Length: 295
Image 1 (cartoon, rainbow, N blue to C red):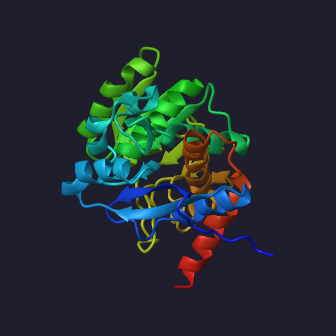
Image 2 (cartoon, one colour):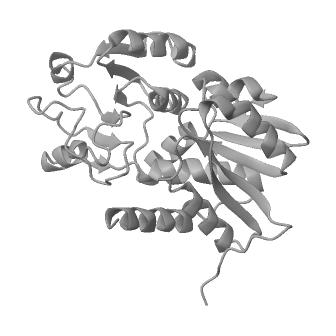
């Protein structure tokens, strides 16, 4: 018999705040985890307009929520309301997981550990690697922090607006040994110069995400670096144009589903203090993606 999720007066509640949240896979992922462990918990989507962040957080406390995930555009805005931050959230400058405990709000960033664990599970250890990061937004900050803590040899942040990449490097420079974190404009010439001097290329932009599946952060006229692994944080579709081009060139590729699952698993552990059922969470995400593709 298939287990079901039942919400009762004793259920512990967690959720997702963002604007919008209707397309998120997180509710399916976390509810599958609760069912797998037979926990009387429920995860609900909570659309919150940017002007209502403080009211929403205070409401969570009044409703006895255990915690929430935080997605765009609220990851920076919620920080001012936290009573404590873990190191990753403080250094990256973004919170994606909130734990309510004893009437206080504790903010975490599980994107970084989620990204790192997704690499390690496929046998890609970034320690000592030369890495190119495409994009300089919030996701890039989490990725760069993770690479720093994992001991990457060098990380170069490429962005079309070079000043934004420079700000990221300046903000996170203290997490790296001097000179190991760099920035460059995202131009054909700069990417072509990577040649054989890069081991891992990571797309942190939204280019290639459904429905704009034809877009790609790697210019079509620039050759794919030999042997470098290509990682795309985009997970819908699982094989983006970015990854398809790298695969066609014979390079190893990694899709973004692993990061989604592992950042969720880390949040699950923060809230429940239980080891997360990662494979049940992954299966729920894959089922959700299949359903979206047939909508």
